[in-house]
Image 1 (spheres, rainbow, N blue to C red):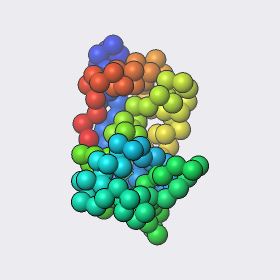
Image 2: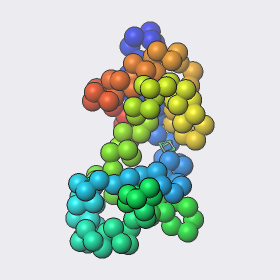
Image 3: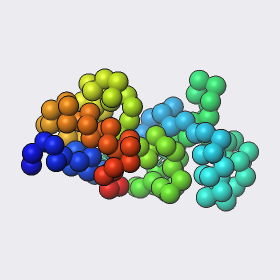
Image 4: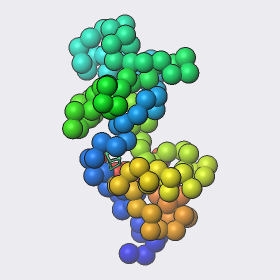
Length: 138
Ligand code: SF4
Ligand code: SF4
């Protein structure tokens, strides 16, 4: 395929391994996330922050359980429709536009990311995805 035809969905396909749902502190939640997720799981916002979040850098993040996974990961994301922006955007994030090496670092932990394309193609796809075009399928 000519590089100019490469779309975001061509450079990333989620393999649903759950690796990106592992580890403490990565998933900040905004006030809007708190409202949405609390509503989705039928608890009030205060209960959600107390029982499903931990604090990192003074801000609430989604809690991880004793096995190290996000509390909402049960083989798949159980809050998919309301998951935080970072989860929805992955791996098409600003950090890759700032430094494309981040794409390669992220690929070390995410088996869905292709690394056999030129950096300019990766940057172009990330930019397109961030603008909402041809986003990933998962
Ligand atoms: S985004 Fe990557 S790390 Fe996360 S589940 Fe999909 S393939 Fe695995
Ligand atoms: S909210 Fe869903 S996608 Fe995000 S880390 Fe938790 S389980 Fe993974």
